[in-house]
Length: 371
Image (tube, rainbow, N blue to C red; front, side):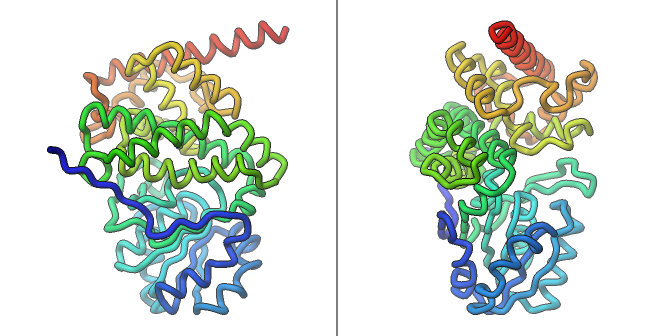
């Protein structure tokens, strides 16, 4: 019998206005917190809740440099030691989260993640994605444990740019397909063990939630209002996708994302936007049915996720450039080998081009109907 492992954050709190509980949650874990956030977070969000946090715990605030790199992690770890902080709080987006988690891992301290956007499934995971200072993917850092608290204020998320929520849907879109590939192959999840029934079921619920509520959640975010649809999709983007990828497993979509980062043209596009295109390519790679492919393309079109290479800056990419993407996606140790099919750069290149061709065909058909 296979041994399965499923891991979770210690506590997940979601709802409008829950940022006010941040100090209370931190005080359960320590008596002095290092708070990390980018300039926008410090000037527009922390300034409004700092007084509430300080009622419960002492704090030291530091600006995040913008890239989850080894250099930034070391810099902030030194600051944490110098100020004798014993709790880490990361407020902001995915790279802020991952940096906060990596610092906590370095120093063996508890960590609280308070996302201000729902753009990735990073908040809940025991994983940090490390990049170079220039923004190119470098490696995954597997952490000792998941965050102690994930606190998601949907009121803040509803007021963030809609593109972040949509990007989060792109990241979450891959969850079911990658977990299902891992299930079929008995491939390891992020713990090195196979996934559990719970993980695979939650990955399926993640996909169902996006399909049923994604478009309405986007409309809610455009109106800067919190609705049940928005709450559902934020939970799918954050908790369901987090558990689904981490305890279900990763496969082609994220490997293709990693490959796409080798081309500078893609660097201005968000993680979830590139993962979404990786998911579309994976559908062709793994020979999914026409019905499934059409459902996923229709979803992407309904919320504004990429469906062609042009949508991620690669409309003029040569076959040689795309082969670099494919070769990087097939690097030794990449998660693409969790797919239950033979893998090579050549078949990945074909999938990248097929996904683009089908996306273009659908766009042309839509323009024809509108004309």
